[in-house]
Image 1 (cartoon, rainbow, N blue to C red):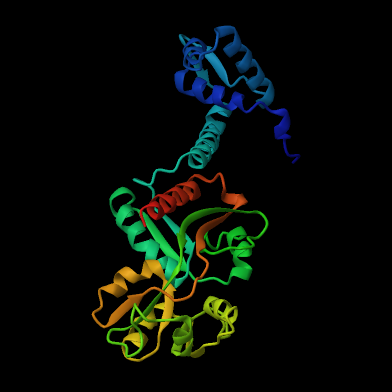
Image 2: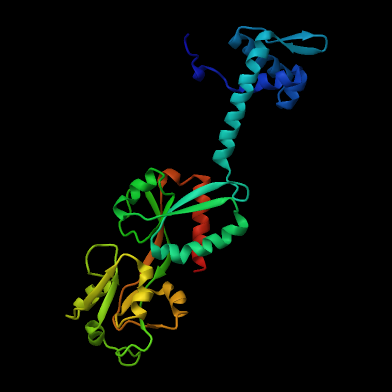
Length: 305
């Protein structure tokens, strides 16, 4: 059986059929579709030609459906309903009523700083929204976004992949932490030379022991000893509070750390460059209503950080 070429069919005729089937009147159908009666009669004529059947026959005051019309009516109704639902779902996203799960590419740091506030806001305004935090390798972030394995990524993206969009969220810079009562560090006398001679811990996702501080110290012909490297940022308070190691952490982590009586926060004796935490997403989802809502929420939350 040859398939009908839908490009030659006016799908508005199916809407006309649906209304005629429900109203059983050309006049009432025309009024419901905001058409003139001649236009509605013409639509019925085209329907009869398309299906090669009378479809509706006047009996008394009503247009009664033929056996053919009775047979095709349920399928037409289902098809139109699916089209309506598809169009509505692509145009609206109501976080108050929707149940949806978002995957956010995020490090320990961005998760710790951003996500608690995001959950706090969504608990009241979007009770059906769930989140999955996904660790990621920056070299594959474009692929993860393209494949929809993550909806957005948070972090520092100096060279974002093609077909992605990036916006800044908030600036960040380093401060130092040490154990309270550290035998060397005092805010008044700490110099870059003294600082370089101390044993250090370094948070890094790379498998080396070179961080931003090393590059800055090298400009003054200074070199530090990195006793510990770790890809786990939140281990640092325990390590620092029980040793003479020092480390540099992003400033927005100092609030929870400052609450610990065993730690002290200090300004670094060397000048480091600040950096920008950004949000990255795929151009493929730029106009997606759910993704747009997520991005707006994250941006709003980060404005208050």
